[in-house]
Amino acid sequence: MTFNRSFIILAFFAAILISITGLPVELISNAAKYAQVSREILTNQDWINLTIAEAPYDQKPPLLFWAGAFSFQLFGFSIVAYKLAVILISLLGIFSTYKLGKLLYGKETGLLATAFWITSVAYLHFHNDIHTDTLLTTFVVFSVWQFALFFRNRKWHQFVWGSVGIGLAMLTKGPVGMAIPAFAIGADLLFHKRFKDIFNLRWLAAILIVGIIISPALIGLVNQFGAEGIIFYFWTNNMGRITGSYVGSNTDPTFYIHTALYVLAPWTFFAFTAIVLEIKELIKTKAKSKEFFTIGAILLYLIILSIAKQKNPHYMLAVVPFIFILSAKWALKVLNSDKTSKLKRFVFSANRVLAIILIFLSLVFTTYFYPETTIFYWIFSGILLIVFFFLFFRPTGLKKQIVMLTISTVFLLFSLNTSILPSMLQYQSSIDASRYFNQHAPENATLNIYGPGARYWELFLYSKNPGRYLLEKEDFQNYERKETGWYFTNSEGLEELREMEKNVIVEKIFQHKTVTRQSLPFLNPKTREQHFKHLILARIE
Image (tube, rainbow, N blue to C red; front, side):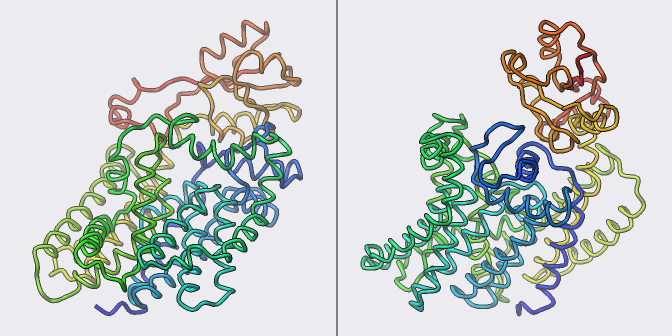
């Protein structure tokens, strides 16, 4: 297969289409919290001391929030502006994936790896549901590419840019931004016994560069939290999640194996095959000419993630470009020949099953769980399905497999962005509560959260005048603006408010179901009504 220009155009067209359809989709949960931190940077006119709901914020370093705030400043406050900032920065990650793949295995591998990356669920979904890992991935792969160049060409500017990449990665998500490039670089240098490069004074220059870049984050933490802020940044927020001493209780060591099934889709079987073949080659040949940047980063990082007590699908995002570089390498090396092998038959058959599953799941949601009635949706979907089944029933080569899988992902994520998620979000009542507040509350009123049972950060993001997160009675009693406050809470929280204040008026009761907790009984329209919880918007008169 010659991976020509038309192929990369198809991949970019698919990525652009899905990205555009995802731009207006509302942010919820942590993604909404991060956007709100960006908003408060502009509200407070303070780019160093971060806040969320007027309280000091230390959970993540500021780079994602700076990007969002800068975009708000340029384009005005909107979810589209926030997402657009991240997408534009991620162009560097796309380019770096191509260049690293090309450097290690040739132009065709670089192009195919890039196509895998930008058409994967990992890329497309997490540029809609934005986390710090979304930006982290860009700076990690950029850093590894620059260091890989340096250890081949010995040009100092490449070493400097690699160090800058690590600094920006740490300014995005803390020490993990240093750990992943260190795994990649360290594995390659160790395997090739390049100890002079490992124990070299040049790393002091890298430390200086990184230190300068992350200094704004450290200054903000010291200002608000003192020495504890520095300890939290370098130790508690990372090791505490691994050991569970800070947060997390997931002990499933296979979490990232079954998570990878959908995060890497539709290239899942290419990826799993590539990892197995790469490890097999490593054990059998111990090739001294082999690179270990990719497999070193992948294995070492995923092992640590699997041991860690806190686990989330987006945590593995930062090594996905490396996985796809190996996927492209082995797809071209093993699956692209005219010869038929058991491995080739298995992978191609598994891909066809996966593609059908993606199509089937989309149709179940849009015809039964949340029936879609928009004519445009069905016209566009019909065109995609015709092309998909035309390819599905024809003799299969690698090129047809890739196009077929790309179409299946486009169909899934187009359905998700334009139909499924908007339908699910109608039950994310925190967004409706914000809109109700914006329409009915006086200008001096603030919208607050009372109690952990109603902690939905999007309430603040979509509010015209966000207030505070009041965890318990003491927080409410110390709140200076309680008389002008509106409060989003649950039934237990309402009872507590009535214990403290006489004139608590219920403005509206909402049926609620969080998007990420919509189980099969809820999705079933026949049993949906039995599975709502109720959240309340109240005010004090």
